[in-house]
Image 1 (spheres, one colour):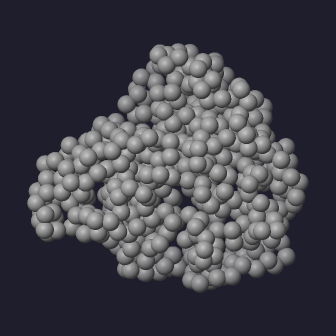
Image 2 (cartoon, helix red, strand yellow; image 1 turned 90 degrees about the horizontal axis):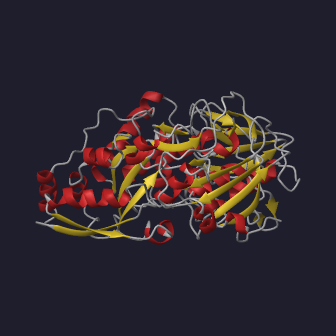
Image 3 (cartoon, one colour; image 1 turned 180 degrees about the vertical axis):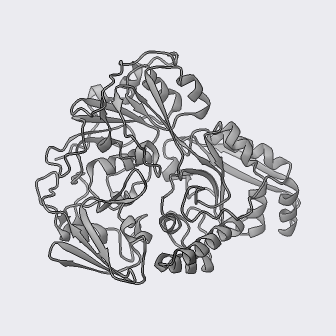
Length: 520
């Protein structure tokens, strides 16, 4: 049985960091690199992640940060996955096919796949795992993704899904990190022990501190899972995380501070990786709480932020300006004709007057747990908003517990989103009325109507028109301020062999580094 205990003395976070002097120079050497092109099996890799909280659990319905996402992809199997080129690749489902209007999908389940306890993965496990997120009382963040499923039936070695309306992107649905395939149990599925069918087996899990996994020798895919053991640490503090890398105590870290990247590049034993993708940083306004119930206030807030300044001073050029919707410039249905919302204090004042106000005072909660530089970004926002007559009080809150105690609790918060390669997934998870992760609590009937229609539309030109209109609706009415899209920046020691091409929908190779990387 998996031990949910404090880590052994060698894995205590305080003791671990004690070996990394706070003042270590960024030029400190690390383990020498080896110029070998082929992955080597074996060894223990230590990775420091910028996420992880004491409130984390193994319940896949609640997975919500870079630490637990990486752990989920490491220990669990999924029907489908996102390949490095953003296409959908087969995993537990070895193939799938749809009828002509994409309302009935048949997924053939791969034979010979076993859970870590030796039990064979069956189509019945697949159905139970998905039902775990469904139902009227479900609070799973993935519930909106499965809302179109009206029926699931096991037919031999396949699962047949009947949808209430067609879905051209349906196979992509199952790449979501919540939708792990779990063994059935008397009360549904067994998730508490972390038993999965992924490339690694869970050994220890200490929320907010560390997770230890070891290679699954019986994994169905022999071309992944190269490490013998992985020790993943939660080190939210950026300086401590960076010091751990440059002093050689860890082999990789995520979420580098863009302002220190230039200095870190001088270290010849460290490789800096920058990947442009769908990641975006936001300020979320709760549209059910005054003053954000007023669309004019929301527009005033959007014109009171200097987006170019944030890209320059927070991202140091490792990103681009956002336009108050979550679709990135490289995505298939990005609206390149939508007018850019600009920093315009006079226009912000105009919208304040439309709301019957001459000035406005609000509080913005932020922590660097939201994203690197979130507090500084909040201060820059505070400064730019003054010219518009908007007084923003920046409330710097603790990193630990930010996602459980602040996000979706306080009326205005700093947030990061990894994004999704498929527009329907991003819109469904975070903007659909009633979605568990709709952190602006925003609802728009036209948007919801288009969401369903676009999902079922097989004509690409018609889909494009719908997705363009949805981006415009968010830009003009939504409660999300999206000032910038940020590149993923992570670093590895040179003895780590990484992928030739990185997935760009999540940090660190789509958070599938556990299965894809190895020692060189």
